[in-house]
Length: 461
Image (cartoon, rainbow, N blue to C red):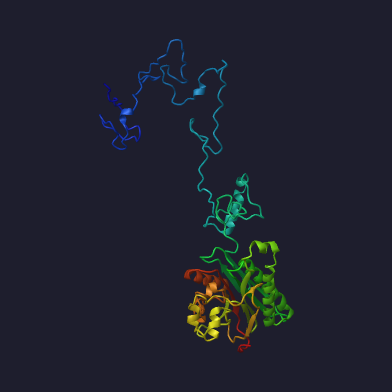
């Protein structure tokens, strides 16, 4: 008849090292089956307790170095120091004298290992250390450059990962070092030029930023300064709306900055800039016939445009589409104003007296535009207007991604920081944040142009 395996006499569980009681068949902590523990082998030590060295017949074991002759060796000795021969019968070479590695204390005791490198006080971070200033971080990177020479480093012409600050960015927009997806260049853009600034953001719902802007400063023939801002919004239902807005903003900005120093009246310069932007967008539709055959359902690239020019005592605005310009006086006790009229279905309904403004903009067709730049536009009608504000203030040029969350002039004035004229970039960031906090359903772009106190006031012209 079969028998149960005899329990091995063990004091601790072989699995979890918990103490065992005599007669335990299973570990009380982990449940390990103690019956499968192999029997403990007989103890046949080389050195017995009484110090006698059992020497098998025919083997003459040497006495250990510094031994007392009774089998008790010195506390520390190397096995290679015992005499012996290699597999060919030749004497083993003497071991090299122990050498302490660099940095080890001279009084180190024998038998202590120093082959493990010293642990650094701090391990290098992939991202920059926020405790360091820019100069300290640059100095730290210069000091670490020799140690990183073995790793491939991006050249000056290659993009560097914004996450780890070390890896190359491949053609697909991912870091080859940490795999982090890189933000696209137009997802968030900021620019400050003299007293004016602009910010554009992709928003929270769109997969790309189809807005674009152009800002700059120049001088009139008499030396008076002039500020220029152009904001464009790509028509999402059109082909390549991001290319259209970028081409239009660049063409209009270059046209204005070139015409104003030559003495062209700012309102005429704005009109010509809109025409230049229109030509630039129309050129995007010039494509091979084969491309049109492969995608006959696609329409031409299109965008809207709004711009402003600020000179000494004169404010000129121009637009096509539903982007807007607002006037916010420095003295908030005086009323703000909206300086543009939308080219949209809602604006047409209000102008025709068919709906009031609240009803028209509540309709789902409210933002259907009736004017735009593009090869398939019905008829280009650039709108321009000139004003002569009698007090200092701020000009807000924006797309509907912002004014959807501050539609009236009063709402826009409430959203503009009080110090926006002195800190335009900060003010533009705050306004973009206002739209994102409201939901960020569209791309958001805004440019701020401070209007200085005129020498003498006048009405609109």
